Length: 144
Image (cartoon, rainbow, N blue to C red; front, top):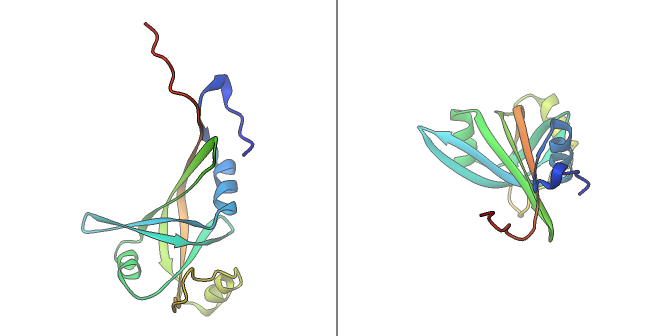
């Protein structure tokens, strides 16, 4: 990654552009939904278009929960030998039901990870994005 950390700080807060660059270049993450105060988390693969996330799903808990409460969190990250990063997106999910919207989502070429039928497309419109980049290193000595 090409992120400049100032003053040797191992933690860099990413701006929206940097965060979206990482979201756009990664295709897996975790979707968090909450129903009746109980969180649930699902590994997902996704595609992006126009600063929105798209995923496919089948009937089940994930689909039911995000239709009950459309407010979601999404997190994606990467870990390399000397650095790591994490991006969290807060947003609103909706199941696509208009043929034009579904056709746009299908054009993204999003394929399920496993050979199962996932006939529902979900669009996540972000309300906020935050990211951090981490440079690995030795634990510093405490000054006395």
